[in-house]
Image 1 (cartoon, rainbow, N blue to C red):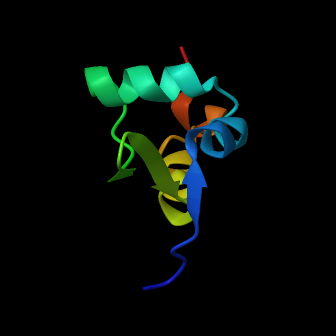
Image 2: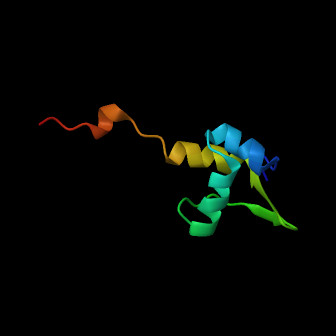
Length: 68
């Protein structure tokens, strides 16, 4: 397995620029699907999955803009 570094919710949230409670709501509501590992009552995120989520949600305004 490539990079199995696990991040706690605080660290994952910092990388994503959101609050840890936002990650919790995303898990609960399934608003954004980011794989996580549940250990006891805590959720951990693989660094690679956070990076993949960022890449999957990257928008290039030049591509999205269509001439009117």
